[in-house]
Structures are given as structure tokens and as C-alpha cells.
Image 1: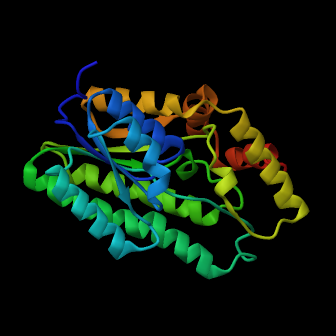
Image 2: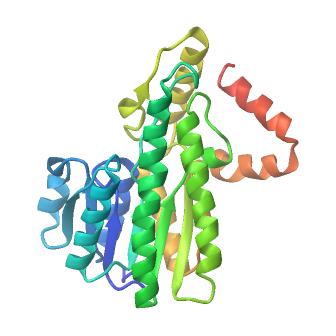
Length: 273
């Protein structure tokens, strides 16, 4: 396989040590792209770095520290000579009733997953505009269309990220830049194991069990990497949904035809609410 579309071989991927971020990084490395991948802890990136010497470059970056994250991105961009592709993938979940979880926890999640990502995107988009080329990928979620129960902060952050993508799609028209709003559904990763959970009631326990069952039955992350690869090869920006046929294809199509109240009813039944 050759290099991806019009890219020139450098990419930055946040959350590269596990899950979708790791799958994205491995896909890009297989294409011959040099990847700067981030994690909060350098040892978590050691396997990728040792397996791809000179091609994978570990970056320590914590979304909880906005100023530090932007500095880390800037240093990596300078070392790479600028990035042709930036994939904002890192994030985490908080599960619990909105009023039962301290408001500061929700604010911290929004600050990390929306505020810091916005800052990284600001730096990346400005650099790409100056160079006249580049692709910016925001890994949002199908939760932007189908909010997950008891994950208020996650839903808001992902919906905001999709809105940011739409805004930048307008600004990138007629330029050498493209913006992709990549919306994955459930994938078989360790996302739930790293979830921050608040107090669980009988109702929230049923919803959690449904989330766990959905994750166990979901596709492997390599499918998401394949979907992103095809999107990059197409040379076009826009919304890309990824996941099982039901989540990524059938459910969005049915939701466009059904009243919103029906969609909410179906989701409530699925999660045992």
C-alpha cells in the first residue's frame, strides 16, 4: 500500500497506546506514515516505539493539563516539521447520575475532552492553514446522535466536538485542508474498564450491564482503523460513522425517519430504563 491520499508522511494521534488510537497508529505506520502518538504515561507507548523504531515517536500528553498538552503538541510538530494529519482521539468516560456526580467531575471531563482538544485543534488548524494542506480528524462518537444514559459529560463533549468539526468544515472550504468528524459506535476496547463510575443504583446498574454487553459484542478496533483509512484515501472531509451495521448504518437511517420520542423510547428499552 502507498501513502495515504495527499498526505506526506507525518501524523499526530492522541490516546495512541490503547483502543482505537492504537489501531489508528498501527494502520498509519503500516502505510509508511511517521506517527507521533501520545499517552499520559510514556511506558504505555514503549511497545509501539520499540516495534517501529524511527517511525513511531512517543509523546507524553495529558488532556487534563491544557497548557502542557498544547506545549507537547507544539514540540512534536516542530520535531516533525509540521503534521499532515492530526487525529484527536483521546478521551475517557464518566458514568453516573448527573446530580449524584460532583459538578466538578463533569467540568473536568468537558475541560479535557472539549476544551483541551479545541486548543490542540486550534494549533493544528493554524499550522495546516499556513502550510496550505493537512487533515484534521476529530474522533467524536455516535453518542453525539444517540446520547448514552448516565454519561452526560461524555455526550456533551462529543456533541461539541462534532459541532467544532462542522464549524471548521465551513472554514476549510476551497483550501487544501479537510476536516473529518469520525463517529465510532461501540468497539471492543478497554474503554469501560477505565471508566470513572459514580454511585450505582438499581437503574444505573441495569444501564451499565447493557453498556457492557454491547461492548463485548462489538467489532474489534481494526474495523474503525479501516474505516478511517478509507475516509482518508477518499480525499474528502465530512461525517464518517463507524461500527456495527446496526449502529453505524441502520440506526441513523431509522432515526431520520422516526420521531425523536420513538428513538428515545427505543434507547430507554435497550438500556433497561
